[in-house]
Length: 238
Image (tube, rainbow, N blue to C red; front, side, top):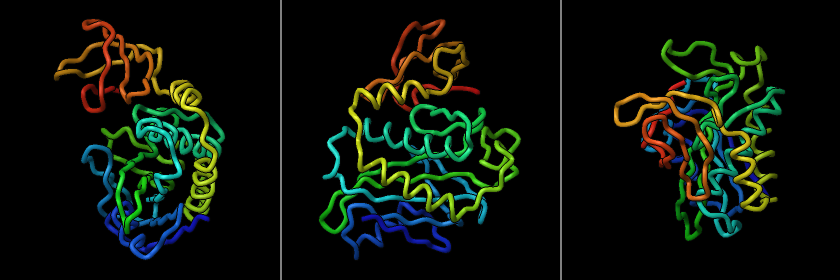
């Protein structure tokens, strides 16, 4: 059973769901808002979102239902959300390692997954921010929205309920880790293309080769050769 609840405004849906779960005991339990004031991204980054233009969504899923490693769970979640957005946009979507969703070279969604113990149960806390109707972004930003990238004014309510159904349905049917890593790499943004990276405050060209099961990305750099990196050790410029 899955439950989805609406919150008019909150600082962070990832924090808010912890409060709600103190009184619930569901395998899947989700909250969403269209006015998140203090959203968080990966590794302490802020996720800024215009009020009543975008979706902030969090799903709590009991860890006991999954045998995947944390990295594989992250990869599979990114695949599910990218597939959902691709279905909405009716076009190809890429995953910028480790878990940003790219539509026509613009980031339109980000994912933050945490593990928490709440009321004696262990949960994956899956937070997703999707830019839906926002039209204006900073000139130096790589961000976009479903509206800017497709020209279609999607309903926030329909995106929220559709995401919840799609995500929970896919999490009930986990493929093999081999299939997950294959699918993740097949959708990897800028894979096998010459790109510019920033490493130790110096820029150089390189080619993304693949992401591995340990959560690292392998890049063939023109000055340093083939190397693996964890998140935040190297920056892709695009």
